[in-house]
Image (cartoon, rainbow, N blue to C red; front, side, top):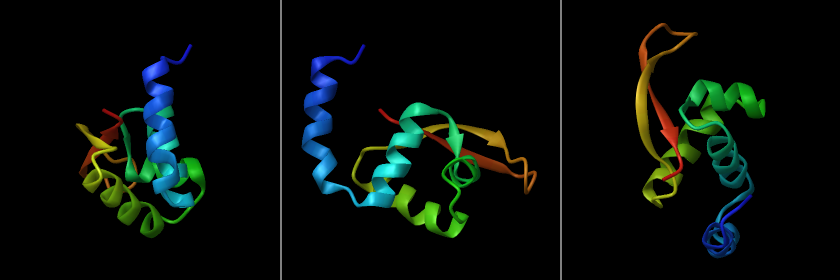
Length: 84
């Protein structure tokens, strides 16, 4: 069940997002703690399309750092995201 305040907040921000931002925002909301590679695989888009959109969502305050984890592709420590 969705809180009424969440629906109100969504109604305010949704028109301000581009289609790719919206897709990525929804993915992060559904899968909190995902990395850019997770998002890239999940929405079947290039990592080069995902990374700038995540940055834009962070700058808007819609997405924030969650934690670090080991990336399954590069084996490096990467940042993970969540919706505040």
